[in-house]
Image 1 (cartoon, rainbow over the protein chains, first blue to last red):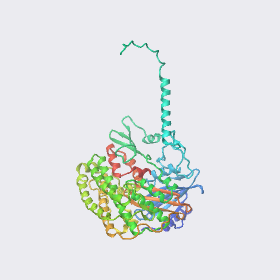
Image 2: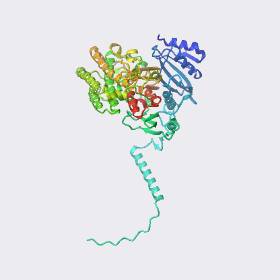
Image 3: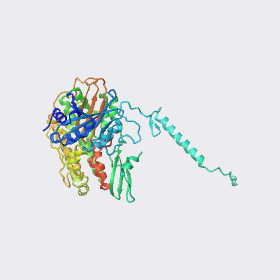
Image 4: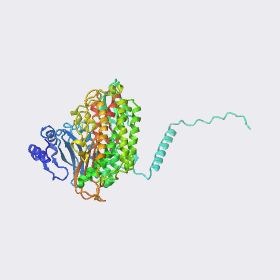
Length: 203
Length: 382
C-alpha cells in the first residue's frame, strides 16, 4: 500500500529518532534531512523494510548553498512495488564535504555519486571507485559549485582568447618554432660546399 | 590522464590485451569510449569512459532565466528533445503551480509520441546496423524523415524542437496537419509489419541477439535502468500509465513487457522488440489523441513574461523514449534564474550497467549490447 510522505517520515523517525530531521513543510515535494552518520542505515531501512520498499534510487544530486556554508546531497527514492516516493537530504560542510556512499544499497549510486563527487567535490566514503566522470581526471575544481572559477585553460590550451583564429595562429607558431629549434639542434654542422660539377652552357 | 582507468583494469597478463574503443567509433552511438581488457575475443572487463560530450547544461540552467533554458534542454537528448522540453516545463509549472490548458496537454502528448516513434526508429535501425544489417537502417531513417517533416510543420524544427513552453506549447496544430499525420500512421503501421519481416524475425538476427546481455529484473532496478530497458527485463512499469502526467489518463494503451520471445527475459532481443511494440502503442495513442483533441488554448494565457517562482524545489519526471527523465529544479524565490537544475537521464544509468555485464562477454557482443540499451551520448554527458 502506498504511504504518504508523513507516514514514511514517521516510520523512519520512529526507528532512528534524533538522526532524522523534521519533514519539510509540504511545499512541492516533501523531504527530510538525515544526519550523515545515520544515512547508510536509514537507506538500508528504507529499502528493506517491507512497508517502505524503496527499491529504486531515482536520482542522487547536490545543491550548493554558500550562504549557509552547506552542500546538500539530495536522494530521490521511489518504490516500484508500493508506488510511493520520498526525498532524503544530507547536509555536508562546504569546506570538506563528505557523506557515506549508498552504493552498497543501490548499485546505481555508483555512477551518480561519481557525478556529484566530480561536479561538487563531495567525498562519498566507502565508494568503490570514486573518480571523476564528466571532467578529465586532472581537472582542477568542481564546476557546479557556486564559487567555481575557471582555471583559464586546460592542458596549456587557454580558454581566454581574443579570437580562436588568433589563438590557432599562436599555437601554429609555437609548434613551428619548436620544430625549427629542434631541427637546428639536431642537424649536424653543415658540410663544406662541394664544388659544383661543371655544367654545359645551355642556350 | 588515463592512469585511473588503467588502474581499474588491474594486472594485464601476457595472454591479455588492452583495447581502446572510441571515443570516435561508428557503433557506440555518439562520443563514448570503452577501455577493454580482453583475452582473445572474450572480454575480462570493459570500462566505459564518458564525459566527451559534457556541455555543462546544468550549469547553464543556473545562468539563464527559466524560459531561456528551454532550447538548452533540447541538447540534453537531441533524438528525443520533446521529452526533455516537457520534463523541464513540468518541473517549472510545478514550482509555479500552473495548469496547462487541455489542448496544450494534448499537443504535448502528440508531439512526444511522434518523437518517441522517431527515436525508436533510430534505435531499431542502428541496432541492425551495429551488428551488420545495413538495409533496415535505411528503411528506418526513411520513415523518421517523414516524422521529421511532420514535426517541422508543427514547430519549425527537425531535431532541436524548443516546442514546449512553461504553461503549454509554442504553436497550435496547423490546418490539415492531423489528416496528414493520420495518413502517415496508416502507412507506418504497414511498415512496422515490414520491419518484422525484414529484421525482427530474421534468423541470423534472432540468433545473434537471443540470450545475449541478460539483465534480470532485480538487477535492472538496482542499476536504475528505466523505460524500455527496464520493461524488457520484465518490470511492468510505465510512467504514462502508472504515474500519469499531462493528458495520458485519457488514453488506452498496452505497456509491452519483455517475455523472452526468443531467449531469456531481459536479453538484447527483448530490449529491441519492446521498442518495436512500443511504436505500435504510440500509433494507438496518437490516433486517440486526434479523436479526442479538444478545442481551446494551447498556452496558458497568464504565464508571466518574467518567471519568478516562489522559493521551493520540484521534481518532475516524464516517460522519455529512453525511459524516465527527471528534472529537479530549485528556485530561490528572489531571482528569475533557477538556483539549480538537475537532469536525470536514462542513458546515464544504463551506462553504469555495462561494466559489470561486460565480464565474460565477446568483444563483438559489446556493440550489440550497447545498441540494445539505446544509450545516446549527449544524454549521458549533458
